[in-house]
Every structure is written in structure tokens, then in C-alpha cells.
Image (cartoon, rainbow, N blue to C red; front, side, top):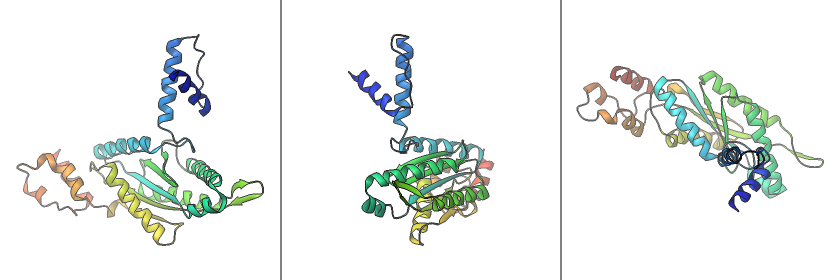
Length: 250
């Protein structure tokens, strides 16, 4: 019975083609497992990565940044006045807007980037190997593209929406956490919303500071008998200084 339920779920999704059970039971079960795994990482409405999948992507990006210092940008986006869309036109129209925004976001980024529905009307984008100028250009491309869209929600009826965008670059050479990085991007998103919406605020790399928690993650294993120069790195030390410290340690 559970296999029938699983097959019905995959058939409903429409993106997984299962081989006939009589061809090979092993191949059939493997295809079903693969299909269910894919569904578990996907938002059912938009087809984007879901929050669970996106968090795993963020964790992997943190590992890359900590090892190589390669820049990475996390964007958080929120549809402006989305509640008004639902209240005025209904939740079906709201779903159509979410799907249109999801498609627009996917068309504005590289294949290597990850776009996710973070929850409700909020979306996230992870851009690895992303330098400051490129990140700002991508964020503006998204904002402008959404602003120019006309989204059909009923025969003869289309509406326009905008998005507010906040972003944070990962601190170079620092093993941060997904929560801290997301909070930094969210702070910029809140600024964009508070300052009038339909705008972008990015926390630039040179302005990012190592928090006390990140300092502990970076230097915690050296707490016993640490040299004087580590003690001089305060919880508000620029990331560039922490990076130099790491190079001296390792």
C-alpha cells in the first residue's frame, strides 16, 4: 500500500518517470527512491529548492569559503505587499504570483547558483564564486526584472509586484554558521523593507566583521595557551585581520 502511495505521489509530480515494475524490481525501486528523495528537497508549489535543501547548500558554501576564501553571496528576497495580493485577488492568485517570481529568479542566475523558496513569500539565492560587483549586478537584475513583469492571474487581468532584496557576503576564511549568515542577509532585507521596499541592500565584504560566535568557531580550539596576537583579535575585528591570523596559524 505504501508503494502505491509513493507511486501516486511521483505520478502527481509528473517529473519522474518510473520504469515498469516487471522490467526490473531493483531498477523500479531505485527510481522510486531517487524520485522521493528529489521531492523531499523541492518546494511543491514553485519547484524550487525547499528550505531544508537550501540550508544544506549554505552549509556546503560555508565549508568552501572557510577552506579557500572564495567569495559567496547569500540573497534573501521578499515580495512587497504580498498579503494585499492574497486579500484582494485570493490565494490562487497569490500562488500564481509565487510561481511567476520563482520562474523569474531562476532565469536571472547562473546554473551553478541555487534558488529556493525559503517560506511564504520569501525566497533565497545562494551565489558561490561571487565577487562584489557581480553580486550587486545580479541583485539589481532580479529587482528590475520583477518590477517590469506583468503577471496574469485571470483572463484579462494582470498585476505587478516588486521585491525587496537583502544580501550578505560570507566572511572570508571564517567558518561561520548558516544561522549567522542568514541573519546578516535578513538584516539587510529588513533595511530594504523599512526604507521603502523595491530596493537592495548588500552587506559588503569589506564591511563584514567577525562576531564573537564566529571568533569562537575560528579560534576556539586554540583557547588554551593562545598567543598574544590571537588575544588582540576582538569580537569586532575586521574579517581581513582574522583571515591573516588564520594564515599565520596554518
